[in-house]
Image (cartoon, rainbow, N blue to C red; front, side):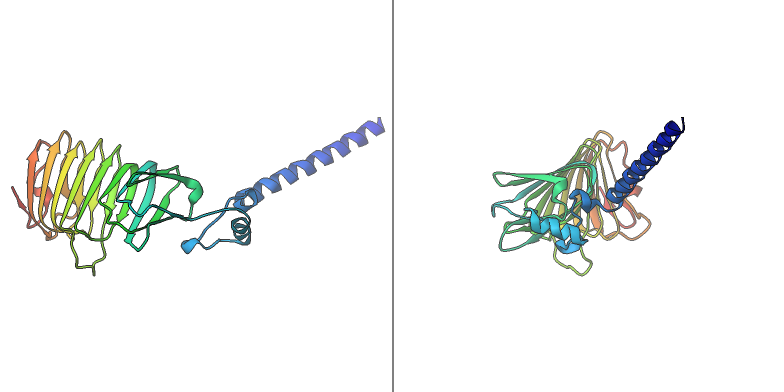
Length: 261
């Protein structure tokens, strides 16, 4: 009998020890992901800790990928996640992202296709060619594209697209073409262009008072509208031409000082 009691107590002690060890291991993995081989990267591709640096040196971990220099079109396929897309001109074409385990990419002819998972992502693209169009799908995207001759922006599948430029950048796009559909939204903050043409299919175009453009033409289809986010302020949109189904649009949406016709 005494033997059974002692044996039971010993078994309980062992169980408590095993349970405590399991908890400690779980906590270690939770608070220190590199133990599982996950690499943590800070800005400019700098490893965040010594284990991340070890994994990078030990395995073929690449944050940069050389791309064909004929890339002119970019498509982002997301999962309702946030994607920041930064594009700059360069002597060669390179894709850089600090989280290469959270996306896949492929190149079809002159199109770069980025397929992101659930995590928020930031991409830096050095492009030898001028990027002609950016196609955003099921993503909340922030676009940083240099001013150039022209740009096409496409959005669908409930995408939300924000775009702005530096206040000190005085250059302008010659023209921008936008087509949104399936409950997508575009927000131009501080964008400069001579002309903008937009087609909205059950979608919304928003802008703030810093949008600087001579002429904006918008064709509304279905439940679509256009609206300044700070309509009480003096706008820098000179002329706004609205066509199509105006059921959900009102002239006062355009903002202070905008000529609507």
